[in-house]
Length: 269
Image (cartoon, rainbow, N blue to C red; front, side, top):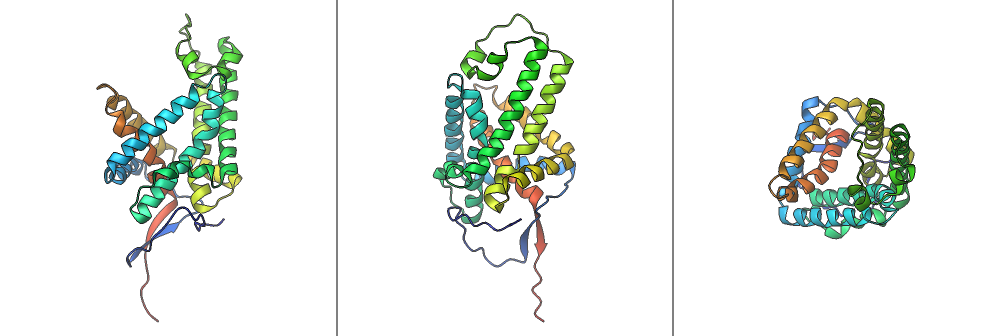
């Protein structure tokens, strides 16, 4: 597994000499459950230095997302296929900002130019699991299988169903496929574009790391979703800040899990 970044468009500058260096851990590491909360704080510290452009990117990304989901019949599939590609772009923006101090908006589309095939495969895994899960739930609940997969976002929002019941079995299946899609995709884009990890190894590593840190990750998602819900209450204005915050946690969590700081040995023999 190559831990070096060979992608030319993620520009880097030499840092000032330091006694501390970041060491990449290919298999990831287990962290304290409470440390997962720091991902949110780290992400905020990261975006707050360039808050204006991050808010603008959050708006742009949200518009792109909803536009894709509104595509008739194919919105759901396209959204899930392309989401890892866009996440790779967010990761590229974060990496460039960390290493150069510059925010490069165009790198939101970085994944379409670099490692697109591997990122699309991640999307195919996510999409396949979700479609299978949706179909199982639809079968159990007696819903229209076609609507479960091919309805666009607008149609789904306006679909009226008199039945409000949702069986425990369906709930269990939903939890399982949400866990699987998150586990396989959360760290995969970063590993693929920043560390040149192959598709298969990336999703396996991502899955294993999520399982090892499941307590912290559950706590993280509970807190971040509470923040998102609260921020959406005052006329959705708070979402201008929590949307880019959530986006940046994909990078802060990656750095927390796959890197450790080590003091350099400056002794001269």
